[in-house]
Amino acid sequence: MYHVYICMCKMIRREDNTKGSSLSGLNTLQNKSFCSIGQMHEVYGNYSYYIRRLSGEHMIIERFITMYMKHKTSQYLTFENSSDIDAPEAPSESIHLYVHIPFCEQLCPYCSFHRFVYDEDAAREYFHALKKELVMYHDLGFRFSGVYIGGGTPTIHMEELIKVINLIQQLFSPDEISIETNPDRLDKDTLVRLAENGVGRVSVGIQSFNDDILASIGRYEKYGSGDLLQERLLNAKGYVNTLNTDMIYNFPTQTPFMMESDLEILKQIRPDQITFYPLMISDATRSRMEHLMGKVSYSKEQLFYKMIVEHLQGFYEPSSAWCFSRKDSPMIDEYIVTGNEYVGVGSGAFGLVNGAIYANTFSLKQYIGRIDQGMLPLSARKIFSKKEMVRYAFLMDLFGLSLDIKAFRQRFGSSLTSLLAMECLFFALAGGIRFNAGRIDLTLRGQYYWVIMMREFFIGVDNFRDLSREAAGIQL
Ligand code: SF4
Image (tube, rainbow, N blue to C red; front, side, top):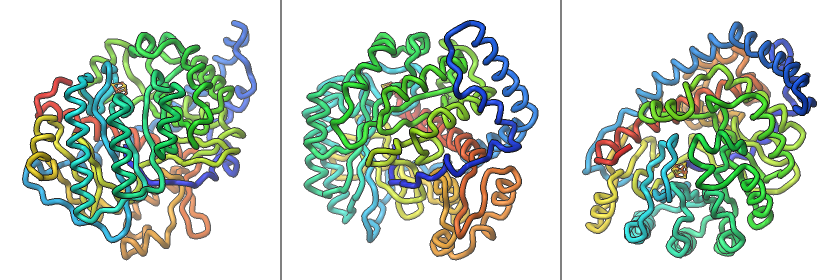
C-alpha cells in the first residue's frame, strides 16, 4: 500500500542467529516430509518443544514490543480531521505514488482495507475522479518515480485501469509501476495488457493453498481450491518482470503442517517474490474473524516465521522483514513503507509528504464531490514531530533490514544513538540489531521483532481506517 524500493538482499545467508537462540530445534525439521502419521507425531513433538521454549524465553520481549508498538502507533495516528487541509508542497525531487482502487467483487471477512462491493457505474465515476486528482498533483509540481496501484482489486475494470495507467505514464513517466490483483485475474490477456502498458510487477493475493483455510476466509468459493490457485500461479509466470505472491500466516486454525505444505508448494512454483504477512486483525473485524476461524493468538507466529525463513533459505533472500525475493532472477523489488515520501490518490489513500501524513476522505461521494469542485480530497492530517519522524524512519529503514547510520545523521542532524538511545540499547540487548561497519543490521531475531512492530503498526492503521469508514457512514 505504500512504496519505495528496497534492494537489500543480504540477510539469511550471513545470519547465524540460531546459535543460542532456542530456535535450533527447527533445523531438524527442515528436511522432514510429512507423509506418515508416525513422522507427523515425531515432528510435531519438536514443534511443541519449540513453542514451549519460545513461551519461556522470548514471549516477554515480544509482548513488550507488541505493547510498546500499540502505544506508539496510537500516538502516531492521532489525526487532525478537517475538510480544509492545505495541499502539501511538492518536494524538489521525485517521490512515490500510491493509487487506491476501492472495489472488490465480494468483501473478505478478515479485510480492513478501504473497499466497496463493485458497481460498474460507481467505479467509472470513481476512475474519472481519480484521473482528475492525478492531474491536480501534476499541476502542483509533484513528480513520481515509482507507482504502486493497490486496493481493493485494481484490475476490477481493466478498461478504466489502463486509462489511469496511461495517464500516469503521460504525466509522470515513472520508472516502475506495480499493481495488486486477485487470482481470478491472472489470465494471459490481463497480464499481457498490464505488461504492454508498463506494469513491471504484479502482486497476487493467494493467502494460503490450504482448502480449509481458504473456505473459512471465504476465498475457496471466490477464487477456487488450493490446487486451482497453484495452476493459476504457474500459468501466470513470465509475463511481467516480477510476479509476487502475497501469503498470510498465523490463521487460528493453521498448523505447522499446513504452513509446511504452503511453503513446499511455493518452492515448487517458485514465483519471483513471496510476501508473507502475519495475520493482522483490526479491532472492528476481530469478532467477525474469531467467529469464523477461532481465537487469534500470537503464540505460534514466531514459529511460523522461522519456518518461512528456513524453508525459503537457499531459494529466496529477504528484501524486507516479510518479503522474500528469488535469488536467481532480476526483478522489481517489493515496494514497502520506508521513511521516504509518497502521495496517496484515491478515496481513503494515505500519503507522507514533508513530514506529515495525509489521508483522503473515505466517503466516495465526498471524494468525487471535492474533486469536481477542483479541490484535493484531503480529510485528515498528522504533522510528525521530529522525534516521531525519527522513530518512523528507524522503524521503516530497519524493516528493510539495514540502516545507514551516516545517512540517518545527515537527515536528522544528530546521531541515531543520541536520538533513540533507549530503542537502540533495547534492541541491541534483545539481540535484534547489530552495529556493522557504519550500518545497523537486523539479526534474524530482529527480523521477527520488526514483523511484530509492523503488524502492530498496520493494525493501528487499520483501526484508524475503520473509524474513518464508520464516520463516513460505511458499514464495516
Ligand atoms: S482481501 Fe482483497 S479481495 Fe478481499 S475484500 Fe480485501 S481487498 Fe478485496
